[in-house]
Length: 303
Image (cartoon, rainbow, N blue to C red; front, side, top):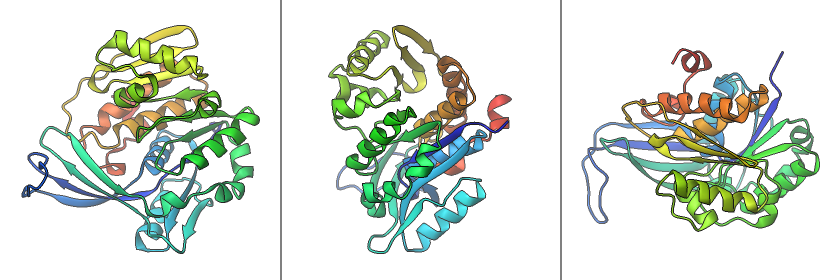
């Protein structure tokens, strides 16, 4: 039986990555090592992760009418992602991210949003039938907030479960939070949403309480190498991270989110979906790049 449909609404970028010994300080030039280009963008990363985990995935996104956009769509077709709703923008270039990664796997990223910033509710209107066929809708915040809110409203009205990865971090309206089934912030995102600095597990619980009080049934706060805290209605769970030597943390959070969606689409309890996601993201950080680092389902099962 094929898994229930997952629709990802989000960004599509081309990542330009330099691996250096350390990240430069302002005004400094650091001579780096390897340079490579890799398809990225939080929406596309999450869609690829879900597809490689075996999910039935549609990506709703927007690229420029340029070589980066055409190359991206071709790559997603090869991943068995449904690409009929990746729109081509005649006026804006495809999104680009400039990424520097240091010797410890930490990164700094600057994004030129390009066509991603022009994925508007009008585009969603062309995609409503696809959204309404979905079991889960997964979104992030590299597209306009008005579009995220519009999709969440449509999906919630049809009893479709909406999962939001609130990255890059920003404040969110109570109306949007009320339309979510699950929110998956990291520490800094949880702090912006709750006002609580997440320094330990107890602070994570406090932050989850405040976020869930705004209307989200399930809060999953990712804590990097420390694992993830889950608040599922009035129950708390903690899932430890899998210990690995990190090479590059790019896309680890995206892989986590995409994998959680596949687990839920297969009917797994939230805690089991998170355990699978912890394994997938652990594999990801041992490899360079965004989509090039995303594991296949078979790798996760044998990890």
